[in-house]
Length: 295
Image 1 (tube, rainbow, N blue to C red):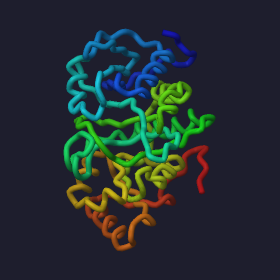
Image 2: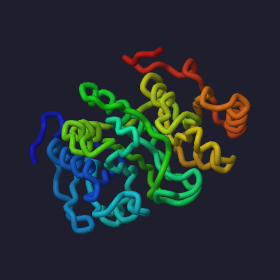
Image 3: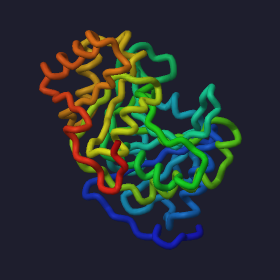
Image 4: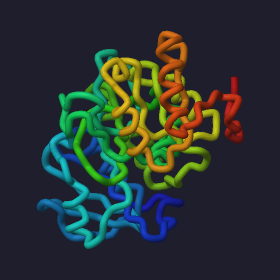
């Protein structure tokens, strides 16, 4: 496998095993896997479900035959393969959207209400706020020269896992899934990823692409875990909020996109957060990221 300068050495995180999961049924995932193998000095790590597995420092790369959404408990299968429990799962995936807009996205997973696309009803998967927010920022840097929008997506779909997890996606059409430059940008992000710093928060309100939370994460010191958009809050209750807090490790703050909610509703959610010891913050409460453009 060809090694690109600067990607042959990796920083190991004590006790960590981060696992990247590709899917043979997903065109963008296959291309992201190919870019990872091209750019990193991976070593063989046996087979996983009959397919070659690889290791590079604290990273593992495995491939499944079917779609990710159907793979509840894959963290347990990986642990059996590797002989140790993973500390992080990242799914390599295509992104599909009716807008057909070229996009690179990251998002936490789980279901606020029913399980229409895998996972369990009213059950969230542990988020990985420090890693996911770092991935968003790195995607913005790596894709600066590419015609892609870089954004969070709200928490949605399965599978169900008990390990901190996020998706990294490339889309939104067959043309973007086949874009090897975009796949290489994703690979560079994952090969060079370090956890972010700053307070950990959950996000409430906004649309599916939670633009305010994306902007805040790109400009201020906060690491987002679960992101519950306005449409999800319509069916959410206090147990949903408890689940989002519990499944965002280290959550201490929340950012509410107030303009996306009726004022009484926004205030009610803020009261619920504060009653649970979660501080509701505005941008002025957060430090600016070095080098970020702050409005």
